[in-house]
Image (cartoon, rainbow, N blue to C red; front, side, top):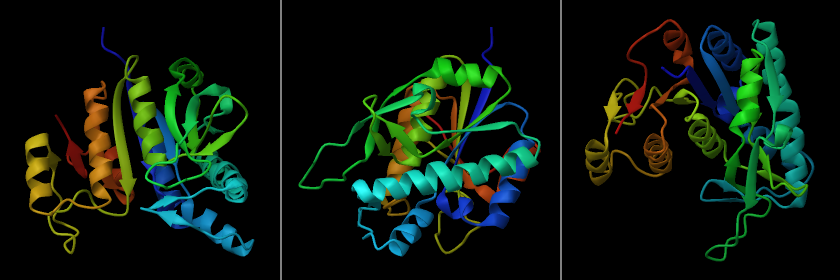
Length: 265
């Protein structure tokens, strides 16, 4: 028997922090009738609040170093302000969402990232376990889980966790019970052949094409870990991974066949 479809969407902080973009995305997200999950970031809000409170913002290779003070800001701004802003807007769109962190329902457990190469990221989590059963139960109640980018270690410690990683981990964790499609939504139209031409979208990437694009320097820096995660998710049972512009959610909701870049084995 065919498994039900589950569509997982990750939106970056730039979408979450722009009220107009966010509302447009959430309206289209609400129009998707399959089972769905939303994962969001909100790092800019964390940085701005940290600065207002006089807390130093430290980033290493694009990742936030999270000391005890910064963790409190992450909880406040991601699990509080950003998550409830998203959930309340989804309710206004007629989408019955429930806001969560990984601690809620023991749904996502992580381990504190160890010090590596002299870098201590502080209270940052690496995902170790997804409770697919509790997430499936929420979906069966016609609720739409909306996860802020925070997890916990099972011993009372909350951990700041990369939203891309959470999205990939949840997708893999749900793959045994669903045909999972994972969608990374950000400000570009997909993976671009020419970064200066927003219309130069590469429609699909397989491992051979990926190696060629990397060798030619077309795919580099921050896009590499995103695509590496996509291939790992596909190897672990996820059916499809898409990288797309959040502004194209309406096209996806209306059944467009070609939106963004599809990663495939």
